[in-house]
Image (cartoon, rainbow, N blue to C red; front, side, top):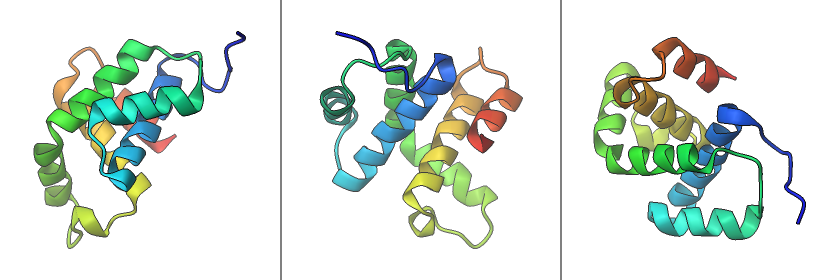
Length: 114
């Protein structure tokens, strides 16, 4: 079966992770259920699956702390008031900055902006 070339490299893995995090938020799914759903819907795609899964599980594991850090920085904004996409982009970038030593914070910020 031919792989879909929707995404490439780590940027693609981040985009895929964002889709999974979105589903977790919208459907109130845990990380494993959302990853299974992504695999069923997206089919085979060219992403670094391990990196994507690490991002999803990491954000899920540290969600409370990530949300707290985001709310501290977002004056007069609760995480629940933010759009689902925006809050998950922020969660993903904050996770990479706080927990992924191999990723430079400027890279995490740039990827979030893109």
